[in-house]
Image (cartoon, rainbow, N blue to C red; front, side, top):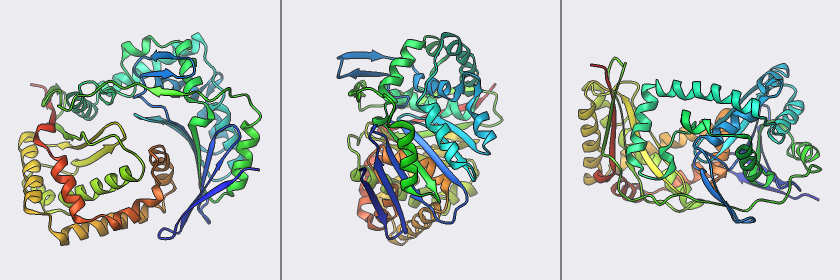
Length: 431
């Protein structure tokens, strides 16, 4: 008999039920009573970073072309008779898929026909269909996607920064790969990667909505447990050594834009952990940025009034076990002045000591936003597995935010905004 674990948050009045099926698939259900819409998402711990790995069971080391995880996502979503989107549309459901650095996921949302939609999701993800013809046809589709990204100034500004920031680590590589790299993809390498990373034991199914956790687990079990999935693959991911230093301090290019776009950021070498420690750092970083340059901060409003930034300006960060960085981006007619003023404003605030009242205001804003986010099935669906695969619980965000101290935020700021780790990427108008 299967056991079910239940994780609760009294603060959020939410709970997640988790069941491990005989085939190895983990099934997580966050029940949202009274909601009409339902989301289901199945994800695998396999992303664009996984360009080299070792099968411990066979001793084989495998190098794969850049963009293979994204290519595999496309191939699973494209059925022999057409797109899986059409199947979901006939059931009245919306469907999508995405690949990022560390995971690939497939999802649908619906109001009715949840059971047949879940069957469809599990069926096409766990039933690959690769032929030489359909793989070759997919290359043309993905080439067009890559070329669209090459024509996107915002995309080029961001990846220019990442290529300057990282010398070796594959976060510097675009998720979709390059036209040359995807041309070398064939049925054999797709099959080998699918068999390695799409074993149920490496995957998690998440369902959010007004559904019964036992019924979801039973339906998934009936669909998968009697099938032959083979032994669990033991995999060692092989990442190149990344030097502490950035590769290039500045990256520039010209494109047909009306005004410059700038993306600048700081490489963070404090990596190597996951779980509760990583969650605490993630929340701490978000609260730090809320305090220093959130939309209600003095620095943001000073820069806005000076005309150095507009509504396109934003910040973001990515904290993973093996890499971490924070970025700022937007349009500006004076990109260098914007970079200088942001860096000076942040450093001055940290040197003088962050005002406690401002910090507490940022904490309240963060917690309020985090609480509201749990009313959104979309937010939970798109964020749950990103946390889960890093051994963090999305349910714990608010509780951690309440316990973060000003000293922790100050210490992070002193470590993070190292001028030696700053990289600036600018897309200028054509001359």
